[in-house]
Every structure is written in C-alpha cells, then in structure tokens.
Length: 218
Image (cartoon, rainbow, N blue to C red; front, side, top):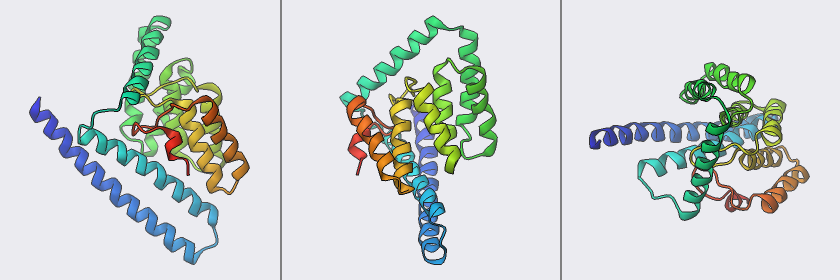
C-alpha cells in the first residue's frame, strides 16, 4: 500500500509539473497574441482554459499532499455518494457498468481528441445516468465558442443534478463555467445573471478542488 502511494505521488508530481508548464506556455501565448493580433476572442478563450487548468492543478495538488477535505466538502461528497446509491436502485447494473467503462476511458485522455467519442457515447446511450452529466461537462471543457456554450447550457438544463465523486455538482459547476465564459466574452449581463442564480440556488456548491464556487467569483 505504501509503495502504491509513493507511485501515485510520483506520477501526480509529474502531471502537476506538466500542467504548470502548460499554464506558463498558454499565458505566454496570451501575452504574445495580445500584442501581435486583434483576435481578442481567441485570447479570451485561452484565458478561460488557463482558469480551468489552474483548478485541475489545485485538485491534483490536494490529492498529492493528502489534504483532509473540509467538513463541507465531506458533506458534498456524501450527497454525491447518496445520489450514486439511489441510481443503482433505479437503473440496470449492466448499463451503469458500461457507462462507467466509457467514462473512465474518456476521462483518462481528456487532452486527446479520441476522448470525445466515449464521452459522447455516454450522453447518447445513457442520458438518464449520472455519468452522462459528468461526461457532458468534460466535453464542454474540450470545446470553444458556441459549441462550448451549447454544451454548458445542456449540462445546466438536462444534467444539473449529476455529481462527480469529489462532491462537485454538474449543474452549478457548468453554470459557473458558463458565467466566466460570458465574462471573458464581455457579456457581463449574462454572466451576472448566472452568478446571481448560483448565489440563490447553489451557495454550497463546490469545484473539483473542494472550494465553494462562490468564493472564486471575482
């Protein structure tokens, strides 16, 4: 067990360093593009990707250092677990298992275009399952422009009550990401409408790093 933990930490170190390096590259591209080009939409898309990468790095670092989840994070994880247990009572075990296989296949290679097929398959074949919402939100994060907007809206409308195992809920997380997308696109009215909805309906919602989403609203 101890050896396995060392291996996990070793690989998480590699992943974290790679992602931090990627952040630096993207930020450099943003800076260079801001000076040399007029395509501000592309710059804003890159900035949004940086924000999402930062959250993923924070999540990996929390796992690496074995940080004890907060009481609130544990509460959200319990809600996610309860939701998963209820799903097993309602749907066929075979369908849940097949969806999980597709999800893990896509989840392991999110940066690869090939991950889109298994994630899309979950949404089309098992739209009633929890993993469909998780898959659709990952798909939204892989896209840009109007396609990103469409997928995030779909997460909010159809998969709001799906949960990741770490306690992050798909609906409010998609709402948070769409609000920041609108903000980067200079659509402040649309962004503020979503932030207001978050404050009213999902005050306790968290991100993958265990932090409350509302604590990140600037």
